[in-house]
Image: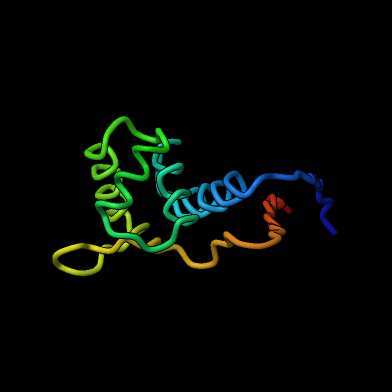
Length: 122
């Protein structure tokens, strides 16, 4: 039977960081390259829920994630191309996160079990 080196870590995070961590893990496991600012933008969308594009861009700019609304729009367009965000509607487009199983409310416990198995040569 192979020996497994196990690492166990217990960390307490605030709501913003635990949501951002879930998004970062999702992107990492799916080989989606995102910057820290992009992750912050997605975190804000996850926490605020569905909003119109204009409202969200203004709110993200007010949170100093990006310097202006246009930078937020660029990040949203990039996230949409990577299937992280959905835009619905024609006139006032509604934005929503397109990532399943991201917990944002209440008490949250993340329980990831990730294994790497080394192949044995006979």
